[in-house]
Image (tube, rainbow, N blue to C red; front, side, top):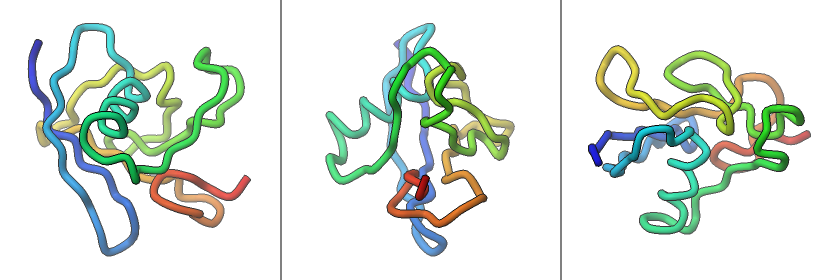
Length: 99
């Protein structure tokens, strides 16, 4: 296993950082679930189908939009896996948008 640093934009003025041990093949959604289970049970995120069909888990991943259930957990150019809410719509909490 290797450890990556994860940065989550939880509001416009708050970013939280975590160190997460990842295994090969882990998705961004797997990383968010690990953070929720082992580091911070207040993290809010949304998912449904886990197959990339519903787009419920759409977030910004390393500055680009992506489905957290299909994108592999890899650091961006700065060596950090950066997550932020999708820019459109109202953010309800953390990575959850008003649908």
